[in-house]
Image (cartoon, rainbow, N blue to C red):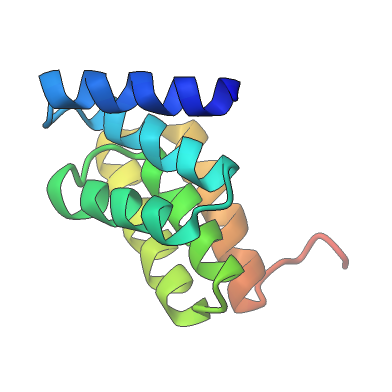
Amino acid sequence: MQNDSRLEQLLKFLEQEPNDPFLQYALATEYLRNNKLETALFYYEGLVNNHQNYVGTYYHLGKLYELLGRKEDAIKIYYAGIQISKNKKDMHALSELQGVYNAIVGLDYEDD
């Protein structure tokens, strides 16, 4: 039941601050944690469409696309996140996104 109360609290906060990207990200993550994949997808895609510079979204949305069997969408979203991470000079996000992008497109050289 604690997850429900956390979800309810996040939804209340979002009512007060409907354009807050952190709240939208937290909701998407909470829905994902509760296995409500379509609702998580709704919030993650909303973030990508309305808050392109919220870098954390790209990794999680890509992973969700992979979980849903949408490999091409995952590749596109990872690539977009890489570009934004470069523009923002967010090296941590860039490294994570480059790693998952390389793995999904078959450029993972760590096995060599």
